[in-house]
Structures are given as structure tokens and as C-alpha cells.
Length: 442
Image (cartoon, rainbow, N blue to C red; front, side, top):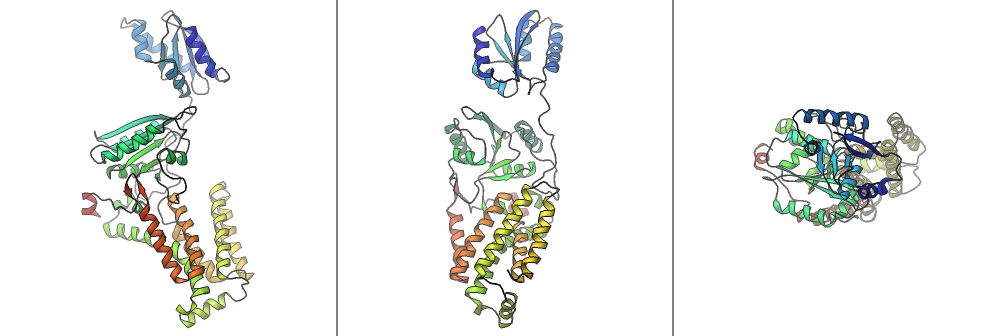
């Protein structure tokens, strides 16, 4: 027993919140081990004593009491359980380590409305940092015996929990096996964020398209489970990671089905139109002003030329400067506290925009184009998808400044070819996945 205590103590002795407390259960000396920062020891001991007193009334032995309190584990598993916030009960006269669930300190936030995704019609619950709570939110919405979950502990020195969810009757078994195989093959690697998880699953870190469809809405995760996808939950990450990700996910929400079919189709077409505006409009401005003005009607060409009167640099430099300024405003608005963010948006969007126009640094038409582009970008579903489109529009602007309208067409072809080349677990990114119910109801 001294060897077991010494081994566990050596692992955590330098942590001031680690405790080893000697006590007695049914007059048998035991040791309690755990972290004060994770365990409410006073309430835990009260609960344990209450359970033991109830067990004594049934004339059970100490061994029966310990079996009811928890599960016996070896030293390595016991040490890992301590890191997870469990309480270890070690018998002084034996070499048993019993792992029991204590009364935890209130460290996890409750289930709250989503903060990064707005819901018009649907549940207002969102995922939290606690993995078990996220699994519970999904199970509450899928009352099916076919829902399967598999958990992994990844990382060698920094342990992290990872859970995989799928519907056995809807999901391709080969997809599930491939995901499990890759996770198990990289189980020793530390997975602390989305990029490290992507590497563990064999994805490149340099792709501009995210390999995961990320959502904090339980109803969206359930929607994709029913469509045959797999869902990953990473402990302390308040969102679900959907695999594989497809292009159509950028334009489809599960809550769309709460609208009449014509309205649902109109909303999805509007999102597609918004993505195309974001990609084409800035480059089209450069192409028509600097390379191919002959395409415009004479009245429109003269109007644009008049709006650019006094602007000291080419259209390409003009739009690149304003796009970068706009990116800085968006990033500042996202990072600053909510009490300051709207002020920065107002200063950057109204005061700065008006000032640069009056100073003849940019044209009035460019301000209109940038405003329309920013609004159109926000129609795409998922912040990670928004970043991808924002990056692609710069490539379109560069091509348009060199080749004009032909450059825009070439850019669209190149982007389409790149998207067509992306595969996730042998499933093309452009694959259109539909079920019989979707075919019947849109």
C-alpha cells in the first residue's frame, strides 16, 4: 500500500491543491486522494458516509460498500482519474484503489443560448465545454437505439477526452471505421485544438477549406447525424465537429425546414447568391475600372470615372487598401469586449468611410461595393466558411487586376477545380448528399 501511495504522491506532490487525507470507513483505515480545486471534499465525505450507512442497514460487508462506491483500478488509471476530477479511496490494509465520483466544485457553466450562431426557429440550447453534457444534449434529441458513442483518451502527457457519435443505421460503416482507425493510430499525439485534431485524422494543415463543419447547436449536430455523418466532441471545446464536411453545408441549416418549402429554397438561394457576390464583386470593380471599361455603357463608365476623380492610385491598390482596413475593423470588432465592439464598427464603418471619400482617397462606388460585399459574406453559414470566402476574394481581385473579366472567370474555374479536388475519407467535397425524406420535402 505504501508503494501505491508513494507512486501517486510522486506524480502530484508539487501541486499545492493535491491532498492525501487519512480517514476510516467501517473502522477500516483508508486514504482519500484528489485535488481540492476539483473536489468538494467535505460534501463528498458526507455522501460517502450516507451511502455506507445505508449499506450497513442491509448487513453488507466493507467490500460490498466499496463496490457500490466505485470501481477498482490500477495505479496508472487511478492517477488519470485524479486528473479527471475523481476521488481515489485507497485501503491501508490492502492494495486496492477505488475510483469514485465525488461532489465536484462548480466549475462548468450551465447550458446557455448560443452566442456565435443565431437561431430563428429552433431550440436555444448550445453545447458547453463539458463533454458529457454535450453527449446528453444529443441523446435528448435522438431517441434511438441505433445511436452509438465511442470514447478515446488521447495524448501522452496532456490527456484529453474525445468522443465519436454516429447512427448505426444511417452512417456508412467504412466511414466510421476509417475515423476510428485514424484516431487510434494517433492516440499518443496531444490534441488540444482543431488543427491538431485535423493532423491526427490525416488532414493537411495548409488547406484553406476547413475539414470540419463546426456547430454549437445540438439540433444541427442531430441533423447531420441523421444524414449519415459522424460527430466528434473534444473535451473543453464547446462545439460539435461534423465529418465529412461538404460544400452544401455552407448554405443549409436544419432550421430551414421550419419554413414553407418556397421560403426555404429562397433562403438557400440567397446564401449562394451572397457567396458569389463576395467572390465576384470586388474583382469585378477592378476589372471594369482598370482593365475592361469598354464593357460598360458610356453613361455608367463616365459616372464611375467621375466618382474616382482625384483618387491618386489605381483601382487595385485602392480596393486592396480598403479591404485590409475592413478586415482590421472586423477582427477588432470580434476581439474587443461587447461594450466597445459596436463603437469600433461605427467609427470604422461610418466615420472612416466618410472621411476617406471626402479626402479623395477612394471613390464613393468602392464604399458601396465594400458594404455590399461585407453584408453578403455574412449570409454564409459557419464562421470558418466565412473566412474561406474572405480569403478567396483576394485571389479573385489579383486575377481581375491582371486579366480583367477573363481573370474573374479563370478564378471561378480555379476555385471550382480546387473544391472538386478536396476529399474527406474518400468522400468528395462537392458530393450532394440527400435522403429520401429530403427528396420528398426539399
